[in-house]
Amino acid sequence: MMKPQIAGTRCIHLATCSSTQDYLHNHLDEWLKILPVCVTATHQSGGRGRENRIWHSPPGLGLYLSWGFRLRQEKSLPWVPLAVGVVIAEILETYCGKKSVQLKWPNDVLLKGRKVAGILSESRLGPQGAICICGIGINVNQVETDFPPDLAQSATSLRLSCGPTPSVEELLNLLLKRLTDVLNNLEKQKIRGLRSRVRRLTKWMRLDSLVFQQGNDQHKGRFLGIAPDGGMIMLTGKGEKRVFYSGEIKMSGPG
Image (cartoon, rainbow, N blue to C red; front, side, top):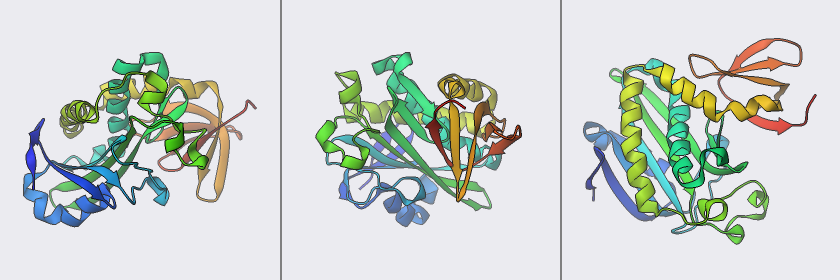
């Protein structure tokens, strides 16, 4: 059953599910007339991120949600994961301080250099614009033993890195309110202010060399910033300035 609206968004909460992303996809057609809709879960048995990666979702320890909405201005689609990342980062800054939070293009939020949140943006086009489903996972109350061994050195939570943390419910309310504001700006293509916020949160990436993996291809170079259409601008080792729209950034040493 749908819960009352939070910040203009209809909400449904599940005790457990395979994935909020898949649940929203499966019910999207019947909910088209009441968008935006948010699905949250206390536990996901098959939470997923980009490129079919698993998003570990221990019961009650994080915020796991998928946000479904209509975006009539299709040109703003590439900005969705960045815009959501900015919202999450700015919320976390209020609890952890501005120096602790960073945005890693295109869809990760870092806390003291470790991943604390991720975004999975999916969409389909129709006659009235794009229908978007944006999956969001934020690690809130995990401790070291809650992460699998392969993530122990790269992941963190608010509890581990910030001390006293907000409740999952408090985070959800803040997030939905600000996401509604972001959606309004994307519809009006108010990108300039968003781009400057992304620039501030990704400034740290300019200090290092990058290894950028795109399929089987690897590019090494320097991060130059974000293009007007949301792509990542990179100066490759061959001196070429290129814009990428998908792939995986890995930090490397200088040179």
